[in-house]
Amino acid sequence: MRILVVDDEKDIVKLIMRSLEMEGYEAFCAYSGEEAIRMLRKVEPDIVLLDIMLPDMDGYGVLEKIHEYDSARPVIFITAQDKLTNRILGLELGADDYITKPFNTKELVLKIKAIWRRMHQSRIAQESLGRIIRHGSMEIHPALRKVFVEGRECVLTGKEFDTIYLLARNYAHVYSRDKLLNEIWGFDYMGNTRAVDILIKRLRSKIKPCDGYIHTLYGVGYKFEAVD
Image (cartoon, rainbow, N blue to C red; front, side, top):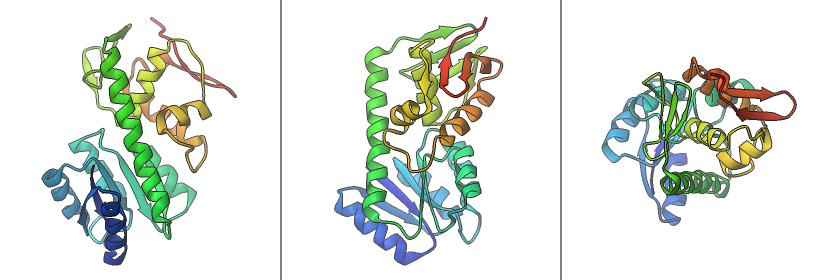
């Protein structure tokens, strides 16, 4: 696995890279937002570890540029900012997880392994099933990991695709927020179930006019049921 570490604190970068290399990962570094974008194209990392406070732009802006390049690229924010609003903003923009400084490198490695395991298992499941799911004007192509609405491709992050695919494949099945956290995040998310609500809100905005296919059962969870 190739991992890009983006942080302007060189001592922290060295610590993270040493921990990653001890796990057998290829680690690369960038000390600014612009350098991060260049390295993204150069090394094609599997996961990006991204600090929010960078000298030339904030991590939110870098995240948007990363998703412009590849919307499915997993990103974990690493930052000293532990405010709830910062965590929520990161999730709203499509970050996969969030860890605050100071942190335990073992915890960071566990988060990376969980994301990698989820990605790998999701690809295997989609390749083994493979069939295109069609409901109304929506098509979900598992092998391509793409969703089309009225013939238009919806640009989704990895978690957004995994969520719509899971719900649509299990048509009308109700998933609690805790169950979605376990299925999509792949581990007990170290925050709260609001992460699920944020993801669903973002997903609905991208699949309009089929956003009504994702139903909220208040106090219970979510299900996929087409309304044609």
